[in-house]
Amino acid sequence: MVNKIKLDEAYSLQTPDDSVKLYKKWAKSYDEDFAKSSNYLSPQKISNFFLKNSKNTDTPILDVGAGTGLVGKFLKINNKKEIIGIDISSDMLHQAKLKKCYSSLIEADITKKIPLEDNSIGAVVSAGTFTHGHVGPDALDELLRIVKPGGLFVLSINSKFFVKAGFKEKFIKINNLISTPLFEKFSAHAKNINKIYNEVEIFACIFRKKL
Image (cartoon, one colour):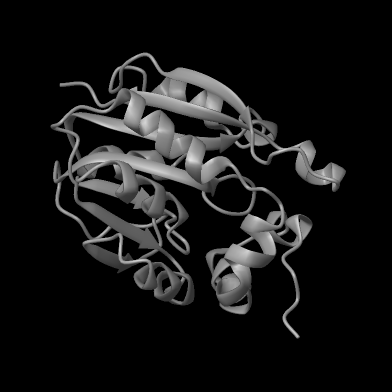
């Protein structure tokens, strides 16, 4: 019997190794036991924000924290741009590969140097990665390095940690490198019998790297 994912376990992560261990345990059951059972909306919401704000030049797309490929699946249905997935968990990426929505998959820790060239990515999307115990605001520096001038960012950031984890301060520090961010608030989950899920609110942060 597979243990179901609990939100407090995901939020209790402290290190990249913790993430690898957690998602090794839950990779096969993530879509059914977490995303589907909790009415997880973030992947579709982030995909929709990307489609609403994107241009033809916003390619290739890098899905940061691609996981099992939920964002990639929604994007692939609605656009023909190349999508690359990157995640720290090889087990989650194996599940993403089965969805056949990515041109390539990269196993890497984005809190370190990302194995991609400067100015090589047209857009970055991410759902569920910028939150407590996962990835903090300093990863934005590497993402800005690899994105082309003018490239689009559509990131989900857990609102509870936006100030506490330093995201607000980081956006102030990089304001000369990016367009004025647009913040769209939404619920991470559709109405759920589990009150914990109903309390999770997300900022969709939408901006472009300056030319």
